[in-house]
Amino acid sequence: MHLLKTTASALLLLLILPLAACADDSHLVIKSANGDHPFTVEVVDTPSGRAKGLMFRTALAPDAGMLFDFHEIRPVSFWMQNTLIPLDMLFVTHEGKVANIHVNARPQDPTSIPSDGPVEFVLEIPGGRSVELGIAAGDTVVHDRITGAK
Image (cartoon, rainbow, N blue to C red; front, side, top):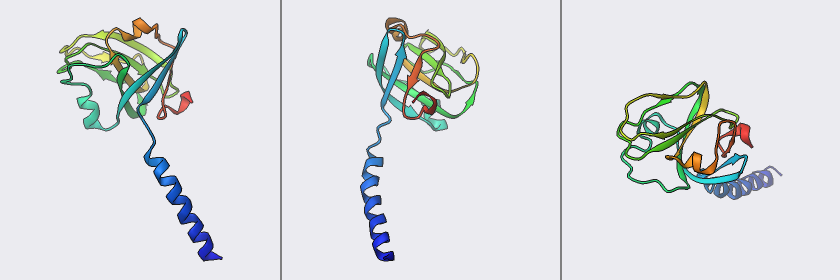
């Protein structure tokens, strides 16, 4: 009987592991008053990844972005030093609500761009894109890492 349980557990593990390996962190949706806006994002969640961000990139597709996961709720600030393209920065709470948006952050600008309070995530998308899509503070960001927005 014990051997049967062990074998069944091993088989179940073999079935689940490939599914976990296929988990896709790249899909994100912003739900706004005028509809859902899907984005393909890169997720950065380490200090070195967050420090580099989108620096030195020369282009970003209209439906692409980078999601910064801080793993804790706190005030954050960003700057555009060594960033070559304009970006919109959406500061997102643990619950997935957009707290504030900084539109069209200027390339190469070392000025600090802060959140309007504690957040857990920052989503960077192409500059001006939030205005084009009608995305505003209070909208919801849905992503597998944002537990409150599911």
